[in-house]
Length: 394
Image 1 (cartoon, rainbow, N blue to C red):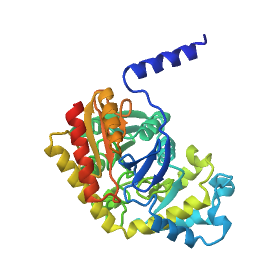
Image 2 (cartoon, rainbow, N blue to C red):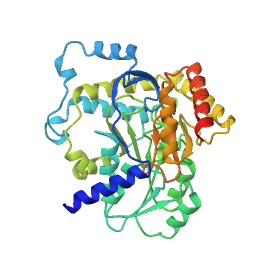
Image 3 (spheres, one colour):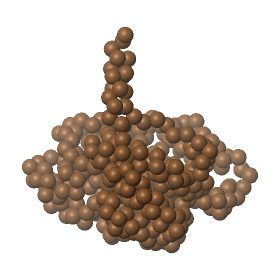
Image 4 (cartoon, rainbow, N blue to C red):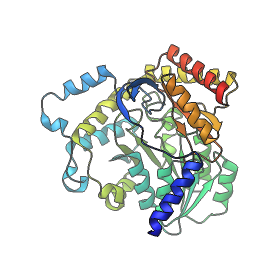
């Protein structure tokens, strides 16, 4: 047999034996906080719909009524990259609205097709041979892949460990250095010390790249993210965020100094060679951006129910982490995490297991991703079922 096929079969066997085999889940329907799997309705704790926009019927009706009967506004495809025939006028309007949200002089926005496209292409384009990328150990796979595709040296510092980070910075005084971190970490639910990172980047003449994927829409009085909430936006050299989570859409953007944006338009492969987003998606992102700015009550409720859930689980002796709307419940063994998830599914709760290689070996978990659409009673019910499952499995 061909060696490729032998290797593939052997690796699948190992993945299965370790309890880490994945398969696509058949989700037949989704109605806001409810998802339907195999004909059964489940409370959905595995979505990134943090503000509940994704299937809010009132918002959907408002959005589609504003598009009136113009078929162009509903266009399902763009048929070209932005540098060819796909740079619709709506793109300029969306990027202008992002710039109005942040309002830093001599900076502008550039929209990408996804957060993965953005991180992959931006890091690869900006970092050259001889440069140094210093990335938090728990950064997203898209950041890791972008760094690996570049010609720069790539070092990962221990998670949120500024002593380790400073040692790397001080050992490389004369190099171009790019520090990369998420603001809210997607699997642990904790936050970066952005103020401390700003101090280090100034002290060692580095650039700071902040991925706000899980904080955009959720933090800040206008939903701009954690850097906005902390009044540190002017000290962030490169800010990346996504429309695919709290905004309930698809796409992402970078906000950075004008020359960086112009450089990326000319050098970023994932931007240059990707077909543009469809018009209907750009229209939604514009609509959602306006809603994000006025959704403080949703942000307040999301924070409230996140605290309730985390406190209930901790009081019951379960190990969680973080301080955000992402609440991981650490299980340990992959097989136990799968059993935990199956128990909850039987109780009409969708909370899927997260296993290696997404997380380190021995730290498999349930990742509870909250939405402001949940009521307090639903959160308390879910907490009771999670605690019950833990008593049977852990």
